[in-house]
Length: 400
Image (cartoon, rainbow, N blue to C red; front, side, top):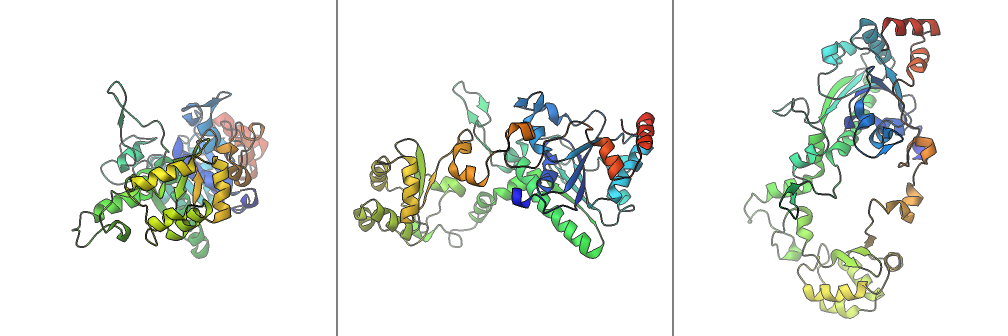
């Protein structure tokens, strides 16, 4: 990331956000864009939201708003609204990361802002988007993952239904990522044509988009088997959609090593042959050579029992070295707790230190701002206001 931190220098984003959707502009900040988070005088309550709380401030804020500037504006005042428009004149993007139409209600929607900056890209990112029957329904967190079918409830030992304890937050993270790509496309087009645009995106859309394989497979399976079959290596029998179809896999499966678990992925015949040669078990290849591609030896418990014994002969690191040496497919099973100790993670990513960004985080530029930390700096440097003018604006209530 350090080599790419200035790729978007010269791009300015004005962000009006609440909670997680503000992550859409974080990608811009990470790449060197000037991201100005405009907050009401009361601030975004993301600073107190969820755990962990690091020296009084949530990790959610420290991560989501890293590398950004925070200013406070009273957008209920005419002076505050004018300052917002003045900022937009200098910007490429306005991010409305909250309920669609929130800025329009203040007279700061796309139709208002394109009058002061025809090149502006106005992007709204919200939970369920600006259309459809759920558009006004409050939501956040994993709602988009339950909506899209990614997450299903489980039952505990007392018979209560619960959220699965180990699961990624897909929609809330991928929505901003996909949104950032769309916004960049808008900026490129605006710089080419001189015309901005308005776009709106939903975190729920992103969750479904990321689970396309299962969703599209289930839809395909609605067609007759004469038209849609399984894989040739499975004699064309349909497997369950997505990774559920991996449950009975043998050459693509988890195996216990001496000190943990590894993922074996020799579904291609060439990788399977290399593995058998490497462990001195060509008898396994001769007995079960498999198909050329996508053959997981599904349901072959005899082979699975043999592989179980083989994998117990080495440690996880020894198996990873083996995979490189013999050109076969083996991967580690890490956890969120130990991924930071993985040498590949350390070589590629690592953590930025607490003293730099407030809490150990994946690579990012600078620490998240306190509420209004950069108000005077932005008003002076971006809008050219003098210290006396800023003092007058504060006295009049425009800055909160």
